[in-house]
Image (spheres, rainbow, N blue to C red):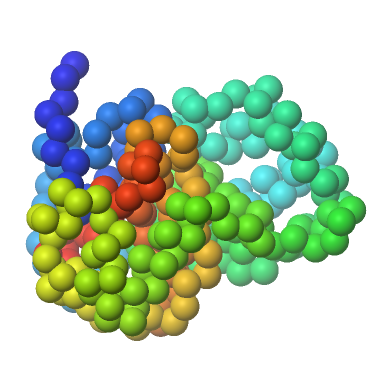
Length: 255
């Protein structure tokens, strides 16, 4: 099946999770013409994920216990469908063996977002305590996680992009975009979208971290975890293979 390519658009929120990850795993272009999706009417309030904090905590506890005993099968079973299509139990087991042994863990915070939930945990390893961030979809499945402390180049670029938005450096933020995306997106478009997201989410507080969900291909996905006054949410930023931004998941509500 051929999909028309129209890459340089802001993806609607409904693309964020499994559709977004599945498109990347299959190598499909992330554009509005590739998928016919409803446009949500503009509103001044944002609904939070249907996943309850208790449900998110339960999934996180399963994953943390699996880390302690290096149970790759259990971890694989907690991945979103899109992530399961990109890995195997054997690969997960290999990665577990390369990491320092986990002795214990505890959940520090559970933050529901718009359609995902961010769980912060502290993991005790033989090398010391390490912060771990997990992002769960509305079904309670893992869509990304990261051991904090190190930032890949595209993670840092995504953070710098958001920093420019926060500081109202619209031209600076726009410089992170691929040239064709820059030609389509004016600085005032960035200003309008970010300003409304900031307002309906209760006001920007801080950037917590950035997490790579997919990398190494023609399209790479980074989740920027942002703490607002009313919720913590993940902004999906899609890069090309050259590290230039070709898509951002600002909601259609924010047009």
